[in-house]
Image (cartoon, rainbow, N blue to C red):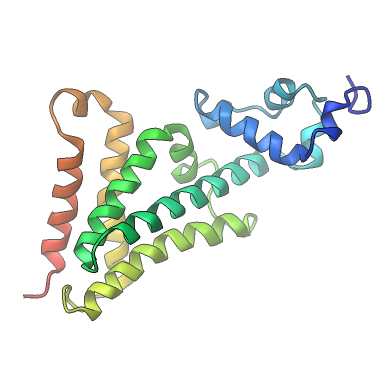
Length: 205
């Protein structure tokens, strides 16, 4: 079937947006490494060559999905910070919960965003920019904590990486070992313990 023979292909709106939407939908049940441009095209009823007008290859499609995921994550983290008090420690707790919640409800997307298939490189400037913005949010909270006298004066970049590593570990455990949290561990308590342990290590005496 050619694009010309299928009116839906180019008369239903923005094909690129629909391709991306369909790919995201398929990603809910399909590991990112198994996602196929052909399958996405088939689901929309367009020719197998149609996606290549908008995405040069599968990596470009995955990068667009990951970029969209980072925008969603960043929005949720910002909202979590706004819902917290002025305390940097409280903001970290809220942001950590939002981070794990995102991972819990967007497992395959989360794996794609932080996995080896697509990384924020020079080939994907928008992906690099939004992923950096996510880390800068954490750095901003830590800087706020230092300005408020809550946290010790340490290198913010290293502190942000340490904070991220701890909560990312909890998120990954939630995805890879779900039975652990169904049977033995309260997830929210585990998040708070991870964050509070980190905070104790940087709290100004």
